[in-house]
Length: 108
Image (cartoon, rainbow, N blue to C red):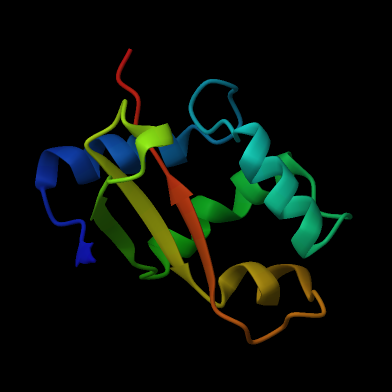
């Protein structure tokens, strides 16, 4: 994993996060929704979208990962938000465990 440092990609990613209130900027796949429910059924997609930009503004890392999984072949990379922030933000039973949220960037 390499930290996302490309200025243009980072600018686009941060712009999408800044628009967390609007649908179409941060959308969860069905798989991501299932993973979120497994972590804590009380967490809603809106809540997750709301804390993602806070995590990055607070210095949270974004990793750029070369995509090798066949089911995600439409993207060259995916971007992981890493840290203990999800469990700690919601006080889940998995407090202190490291959480990784894989994301993709779609240009419209």
